[in-house]
Length: 265
Ligand SMILES: Cc1cc(=S)c(O)co1
Ligand SMILES: [Zn+2]
Image 1 (spheres, rainbow, N blue to C red):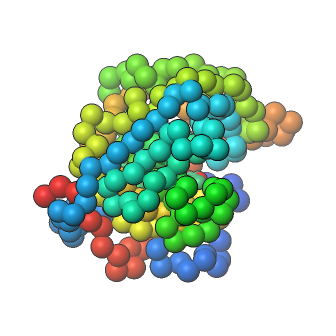
Image 2 (cartoon, rainbow, N blue to C red):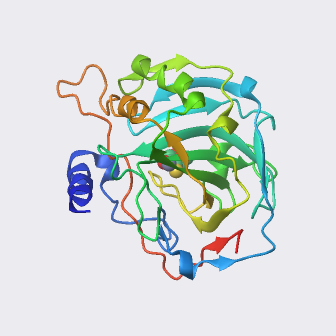
């Protein structure tokens, strides 16, 4: 809608990270995209996703000036995803969200142009082939990101522990300890139905190393829970002008002829 475009344009001007760089590595498999359901291709070979998360590997939550990240210890294969379109096992390193200033928009991907209020990204890297995230992030099959749409409705009990930690990290570069959080509680009940395609990170360095798995089923969070996301700030405590952390989504990119496959018919 026009208000969303206005917000996105405002962001492009205000925050360097949302200004699209002139040269993008490769540039023909960027994310996010609109998922055109009638153009997606059912692939019966796609298996169910297998996530195996250990809440003990949860370490901290911090505001990186783009979003807030919940970081996991990825020095062992304790929290992983495999199956689905993936040939290898991928280690969870962090999850974060993208959201709008209004419930009317905020997601990065859309489904037949339908916008959701926010989008969760669970970021994993290929630990069968690489030894560090920093290495995997540069490689074609380096990352696997699970995307989950958030819709405003009933309160999400599992999310509340995370929401309660946000006031402590209002400013950019603030961090607090955060333990024993099981990210599986943020997944929809049905993780067998998803769309998958090859794309990129949606924030710099925008590298084209991501196998995306976008869940068909959304999760619900309450208006109040999302309002706490919007109480975060893009800016650090010492900056004279404080900017509310909202509309931290990237504008949609061209599919460039890519096919989105679905795990369901
Ligand atoms: C690694 C990474 C992935 C995504 S999708 C993001 O927004 C930021 O960082
Ligand atoms: Zn993201």
